[in-house]
Length: 332
Image (tube, rainbow, N blue to C red; front, top):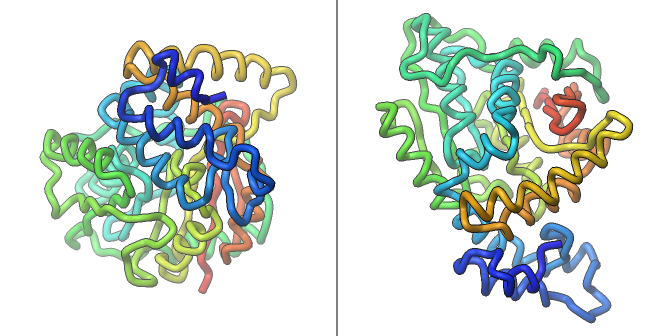
């Protein structure tokens, strides 16, 4: 568990020390410690709801410079395949207006942009490579409204753009300025200017966009860090046009018997130590591991997406359920 003891042992970066100390003592000894009206999970701890945004912000400000390389090391490169599959399911079309939330370093957004350029020009400019199918690491399961409704909505989203039309920019929205700064550096290195990529600092729970602005919305490994996930889902629904598609890539629950123990052994014993060696910050990665275990399972998350107004909700498990891609459509 992420705790004051870890801070004192030097496992937390200096930037996180004061914040983690406050988290360790928030609500201690009080009867409201786990009252969902007043507190929220921050890893395995419960903190006042109004403090989680600051705590998560400090975590990501600390890890931003090493975020991409840590993703490679922690997942053995699998995060690239998972994100490729996300964009493959999205099937971006030229002219599609897309929003990627909590996507500060641009990993998903650049893939979406490349897919749009491929659709318009036949090849991406400075792309990250072709998308990969589900293959042997993917297995599907679904819940919710009929696939017929989903297919009809999918055909509506972003359709009909002429091949000669100017590609709209892909919009990245992230609450963390440090993560956005890393994304802008990558965009500059790729020669992707504001006509191709827009970088917006904003909260997933109160998006700074007009209703019905986007044809599609993705969020990858970000929704579990949001304080009010139901509010973020409602905002996703509001920001989409009728026929728009919502896709969420997030860590989920392992579905293979016996594998959870191995996964836990790796997660709790190896990942924080990689963070300590590479990023000089074990505590942030301890939080990330704990936050994964606190996130709802596939079926529970599907119900929350439906409650926000989405239809045709289904999900696809990847890598035995280590992660899942949830999909839903705004029909009206």
